[in-house]
Each structure stands twice: as C-alpha cells, then as structure tokens.
Image (cartoon, rainbow, N blue to C red; front, side, top):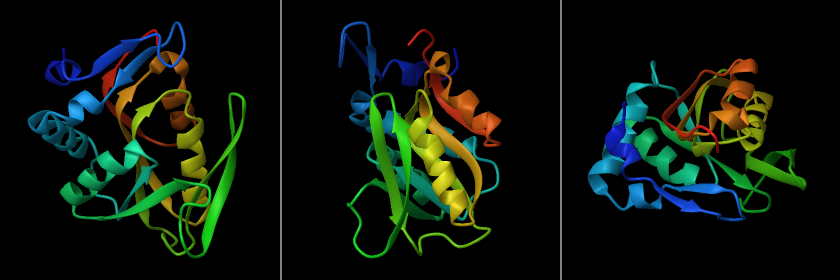
Amino acid sequence: MANEDLYALVRTIADYPKPGIQFRDITTLLLDGRGFGLAIERMAAAVGPAPDLVAGVEARGFIFGAALAHRLGCGMVLLRKSNKLPGRVTGINYALEYGQDRLEMHSDAVTPEQRVLLVDDLIATGGTALAGVDLLRGAGAVVSGASFVIDLPDLGGAERLRRAGVAVSALLEYAGD
C-alpha cells in the first residue's frame, strides 16, 4: 500500500467526538519528525509547478501549509476563522452541518492571477475547503490545487472540489468514515 509508513503514524480514536465516528488523529504523525518530513516531501512531490502561495486553513492546515510553503520556496497566506486577523480582511460565510462559519484573509494577501495551493490536514465534506477556494478566487487568485494529508472519500469533499475545477491530492484515504 502506498504511504503505508504514514498510515502507521496516524492514530484512530473510536467514537470521537461522538459515537460512530472514527477520528483520524494526525498529532501522532506530527510527533514523528521523520514521518512529518516524509509527509511534507510527498505532498510537495504531488504539487506539480510550484505555486506563488500556499493557503493554509486554520488550524492544522497552518502546520502542513507552512512546512509545504517552505519546501516549495513560496509564501503563505492564512485562512482564519472570523475576527482572528488584524487589519483589513475579506471573508466568506459558509454553511456547516448545523449553522454557519466564516473564513477570512487579509485583503492584500493575494493579488490577481497569483497561483495558490490550498492546504489542510483533512478533507471530509469539503465545506471549509470550498469556502477557501471561493475566498481566494474572489480575490482574483488562481487556485492551482488542493493538498491534504487525509481524504475521507465517502464524505465527498474531494469530489466536490474536483467538480469546482480544483485538482486534489491526498496522501492517505480512509474509506467508510
């Protein structure tokens, strides 16, 4: 199996945060310096042409996004929850299963036509990732792709991104979650 070494570093916590959920915990991957380094190298190898910026989604997307931006030699933009950034921001509201949330970035973080790679630790239903894509595109950026450590394909998020014209890569897949 591809990336078997990385699968071994992801802990599964049953029934968290509620019964029936198999939570894929990447903190155990982060604890292993070699494994974390391999994850970043493999994410970088899947990118293709280097983007101008990496956009990390709060909060674990910051960890992988910053390391990947460093590896690719590009800058990083933070996509944060509401009211976390100083200065002028632009944002987008998006639907959650039970309510709404908001992503924001600095208004001057991206310029038109910049190529941006969206990065997060996990793609599930895709709501937050799609909001990030819409926020970046609304500022004129070209979203060159989206990169994740984990994909939960049965929840459809990666497919939703592909339908929105975003190339998606993930190192690990867990079916049935």
